[in-house]
Image 1 (cartoon, rainbow, N blue to C red):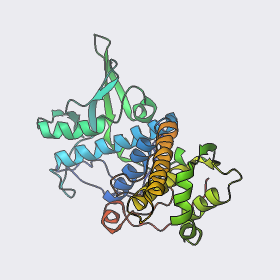
Image 2 (tube, rainbow, N blue to C red; image 1 turned 180 degrees about the horizontal axis):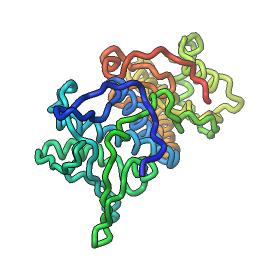
Image 3 (cartoon, rainbow, N blue to C red; image 1 turned 120 degrees about the horizontal axis):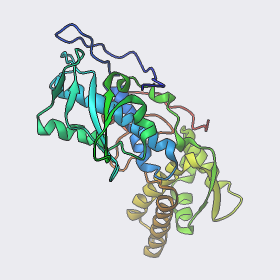
Image 4 (spheres, rainbow, N blue to C red; image 1 turned 120 degrees about the vertical axis):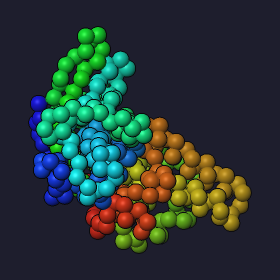
Length: 313
């Protein structure tokens, strides 16, 4: 049964040729912001907790609804299309979910998507839901039946419910946790930071940069800090940037070697202990903490948003 539907921004309404109204989707830049904020946060925050996994599953359901629209409307976002539900199958061993391509129209007719490329497009999103994150996707589905072999459960996914999504800014984000964790600071990393970034961060307009400066330069212990979890990503970014700057700096080779080792050790620690990696790895996206685009090129995809303070809720 459908429960806890969340209303999102006023999306576009599309009418089918038969006169029935199909489901609505948020604007493209809103969906892209959702995917950047939730899915990439999940990739960075492996092991933070089940809430992250549920958020990613819910976002994947939005991606499935958008994929069905694109498939049936041939990627013409102004074209009519007629689909209200999609068949999903949970295969209990090994716990994966598939979409065989069957869907229902507003009139209740069951049809099939035969294009293999289209089915691959659906798989790209169904890979984000599984037996381990049911709380994020199962409320948007009605169970049709359990197959006779008891190894597969068939669902009817409500595409309209999946397309309703809260504003990305309202999404709870476990990466924003103010809970403190202890991080060892390698001597080589701190040497590079004090030379390259300390003064820049101290005078920066970025709240996140200032918090990193406060964390590193006013620490009570020389080589260890207690930091809020929400700053770990910025600490990883700082280490990766320092690694790049050190590689090209005109310094003694022994100093370069020590600083590179220090940055590498810190990056390895953040990844191994907390699942945190530099953001964004490919150079594009939106910072979860600042909520601003990485550059002008990616801003067209995720939308333009003013910077906000780096304060934990």
